[in-house]
Length: 95
Length: 490
Image (cartoon, rainbow over all chains, first blue to last red; front, side, top):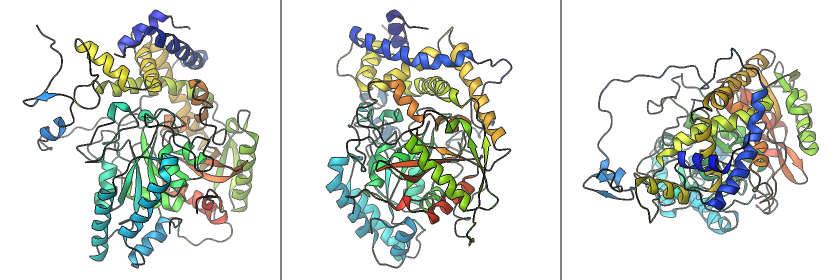
C-alpha cells in the first residue's frame, strides 16, 4: 500500500489539520514508511479471533443519575481562548 | 542526603534530622543549578513547592504524617495539577493552567503529603521514545549529555538520574516508563492496566495508558505505588480491588536463596537478533545472578511479539486521533491567531498547536478508522492484540515472571533517530506487547555497556506487582547497579 498525495490531503482534512503542499510531501514519505511497518499484520490469519478492545474484560459501570460535581464553570472557562456571558465563542456557523 | 532512598528520607524526616522545607530547598537549589543544562523540568514554582513543604512539616510536627509526607517528587507534565501549568510537552497546552487535580496528584500531594518539585519535560502528548518531540526542547541524559534520556517520560527519568528529585511519576503507553528508566539507570514500574486512575492524566491511548513510579530502587517504587493506586469512580476503567501493601514481601528475612522456587520465563523471541550484544551480555549476567538467588529459568515463547509494534501503531494512533480531537481551540489551549470559518479555525489551530509526530499519529489514526479501512487495519490490529495477550497467558502457565532486555540498545545520540519515525518506534520492541496485554512490567538497572546503563525488563502476571517488586528488590539487595550515579552527580 502506498498513499497518494491526494489521500494524504484527505486524511489531513479528516484529522482537521491544515497541511501545506510541501508538508504533504514529507508527511507522505513518513506515513508510507509507517504503513509499510503496519502492513506486516496483513500476513496473519486472524479468522475466528475475537478483537481485543481492552486489557480487562469488564463491562462499563453505571452510576446513579445524581448530581455529584459542583458548578465550576467560571474556573473551567477561565482557560478558554474566548468566552462571553458563560459561552464559548467560535466563528459564526449559522447565518 | 540527595542519594538517600525514600525510606531513608522518611526516617530522616520522622527523626527531625531534616525538615521537608530543608529537603525540598536542597532539591530546588539543584534544579536551579543543573536544570538549564539537563532540561528535565518545564515548570518549577519554588514558592508553591515550599508552601507544600511547610504544610508537610506541620503534619509531621502534629504526628499525622504518612510514610511519604514531606518527601519531594517530580511530576510528569501529563498529570493535571490545580494551579500548575500543565503542558503535556505541547505548544497546544503551553499556557494551560489546570483548574483541577488528577487523581494521582490528589493522592500524592493532598493525601500522602508529598511535595511537588515541579513538572517534568516529556515527548509531546507522550508520543515518542527520546523526549525529542517536546515543544520545550530535548532532555539531556545525565549519563552522557549528547544522548537522549528515552521517552516519553524522559524528563522524569533525567530528573531522578541527576538527583534533581528523589523520585518521579511517569506514564507508560508503549514503554514510556520502562525505556527511559532503562536508559537512565532507574527502576520504573508500569502497573497492571486499571490499577492507577487515569483521571486527570492527559489521554493518549486510553486502553493502554497507565501511570506509575520511577525511582532509584524497587523498594522506593513499592512505597510510591502504595500512594498511587486505588479505585476511582471518575475513571471508567479503574478497577475496584482490595487495597494491597506492595512493600509486604520486601522486608521478609530470607537466606542466600531468597528466590528459591521462582520460575523465570525467558522468551526466546527477546533473546534473538535485534538486540545489541553488549546489552544482551548484561542481561545474561543478570540471569546468572537470579540463578544464584535460587530462581530457575525456563524458555517460553511469545510467538506473536514481532507483531506488537505494527499492531500498536494502529491501535494507539486510532485512540489518539479520537482523544486529541478535543484540542480544537474552543474550550482550552491554543487557538490560531488568524482564521476564517469554524473549520478553518480547527485546521489552523491544530496545524500550529501540534508538532510533527503528534500530527502523524493523528493522521494514521484518522485513516485506520475511516470508512473502508476499519476492518483491514483497526479490527485486524485488535485481533492481533488478542493473539499477543494469549501468548502471555500461555507463557505464564510455565513461569512466574518473564525476563528480558527492556530496550534493544543503550541511550542513543540526540538526533540519531529523530528523522526516521519507524526506527524510533522499533526502540520499544520489547515493551509494547506488555501494554497491549495490560500486564505489569518493570525495568531495573542491570549493568553498563560502554559506560551507559542497561535495563532489565521483568513482566508479571495480572495484579502480580507485589511479587514483581520483590523479584526486583532481591536482585537489588545482591547487586549495586541501581546505586550507581553519573560521575559528576555528587
